[in-house]
Image 1 (cartoon, rainbow, N blue to C red):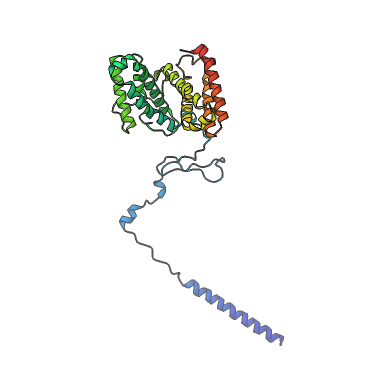
Image 2 (cartoon, rainbow, N blue to C red; image 1 turned 135 degrees about the vertical axis):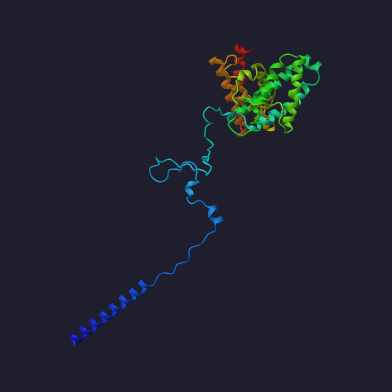
Length: 328
């Protein structure tokens, strides 16, 4: 009985093996069905490159291990590196002064616009101009020349930046010319008055020419007109507005404007070429004034009257001590 079972099992195993071999041979004999390859027209073929790498420009960014731990720089198809994400703490580019830390684009634009009605009062007819309003025009044109010099060097976007170097030169010439009231300085002032009207109205003055964005500061304006504007900002405006907390709150925006202007002028008068710019004591007073003006700005932004008032006191002290030996 055991022998019968043995032969029966052996027969069944051989049968199954033969069936499996036959099934495998049958599958191998059949060819897999495939879709027909597409046939593209010549117009379609010409649209695409044979090798996409031939059309890419610029170096490919490093990928994977071995990059030194540095984040790869994305590259656009034009070959121009894509800008990396900016941070608020990023310093200004090498060789560029961070004017944005002292004065905002809005304050610059507002101050330029504010000069138009003042210039209109100073430049009316030759007689009053020669009789003394030339001195007002000198201060106004000098202020404009300084502002356009700042715009030309500004570390960010600000209105009139493209034409700022040329505008700086035009208003600088007018400012120097208005030191005396003559027919020549009056005629030049009339031209700049028209330029300013066009500029504020949204047009580019036809007289603007290309110039170097980097200012030679003592060729932009004399120091005295700047000091006059600084004293106006601090003595006639900031001090009265900071006399009480109520006045401080009522004049927040005006204080912010004038304090930033004081900070900018305090920086400008330190530049090489100006009188006393090689004197460490004088520079110390100017830096103290600049930093205290920024303290007033901080006081406004944080609604801290004590901070703003204390900073104004620092400026008062610095001005008093500076005037004892450095008036010009």
